[in-house]
Structures are given as C-alpha cells and as structure tokens.
Length: 231
Image (cartoon, rainbow, N blue to C red; front, side):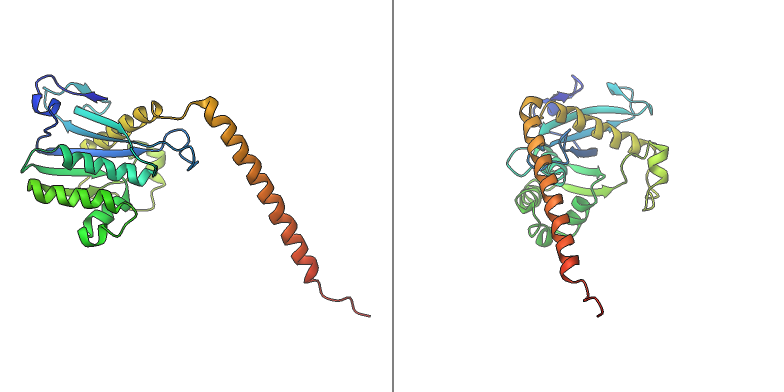
C-alpha cells in the first residue's frame, strides 16, 4: 500500500525525488519461525513542512510511505531491510541525491563495504541490482545507521552502542514511521492462523523430542565415563 500527498504526482508515477528516506523490515508475527516467516519492507520520506500529510507524535510528518511484502522464498528480516534499499534506488529519479537511514547494521555495513564485498553476501542478488541501478541512474546515495526504538526510554537505556551524534528527533520520528509501516504491512502478509497453528504444534513436538534425546544422551555419556569403584 502507498500513502502519498496528492500533489506528488511524480511519486505516484514511481519517480521518487531527492530527499531523506527511512527504511525498515519486519518479519511479522511468526518472525521466530523460519518456515512460517513472511517479511515486509517499508520506505518513507519524511518532511517538516506544512505541506506534509501524515503527522506523528513528534510533530514531524511523513510525506509519503510505501510498504510491500518481500518476494521470493528467502524470507529473512535482513533481506527485507535490503529490499527496502533496493526499492528506493529502483524508484528514484535519475540523478537524485538520497540519504537512506535504517536500523539494520548488517545492511549498513555490507553496503558501505562496496560492491565487491556486497556481492559476496547472502543477498548478493539484491546488492548487485542496487549498485547497478545506482550507476545507471547516476544516483548520489548515502546510507546511514541509527539504533532502533530510540523513542522508547527503557530500550534506549539498554543500548550497548552509542547513539550517533547526528541523530535528532527528526531521525527518531522517521525511523519509527518506517517501523510502523513495515509492521502494518507484515500483518497483512502473514500465513493464516489455521494454517500456521498445526505447523507450530509439530515444531514444538519435535523440539521436545530433541530435548529428550539430548538429555538421554548426556545421561548415558556420564554413566559410561563414571570411574571404577575402588576395591
């Protein structure tokens, strides 16, 4: 789904302008289960101008947002984050100057290592398309990382890495807007509960069997290594 300002005709046509974009990926309700996980990506363009249409709690506004299910069999959150970056360069106007903020450190690190390293990653196909499109469209793209959920004081206290000095309320609001868009899209992209429930039940059964076999194996190993009783 896409939320947009009616005056932004170029966005409706898939020609995204220069600006500061935020992206995020979500694994949905079954994110802990690789078999059932269905991911979604989101890209938002933030603005502080009065022409913006969707306001958030920090008084910064979303100029437009775009969220989409992650296509393909490989459903990982990191790939969903990478797909958001791919969507940005795919839809950007030729020659656009873009700044892309995301909270996924692996994607940030992989992109900034350059094309030669990125095409060796697990999501090489997307990174190849990203760098190829950047060159073909002559895009000026800067990718920056910031921690997620900085608007939550409790989670912010638990951060193990420092918050970059350049982060402001604008960046926190943009990151939250992208997170919200990806989460909403993910909810519409999930496997139906009546399909997922029996799969989760079988997974739980297998885990219990594996734990029991491990316990028996460890107990047998301890008995076999027991020293002989002194005579």
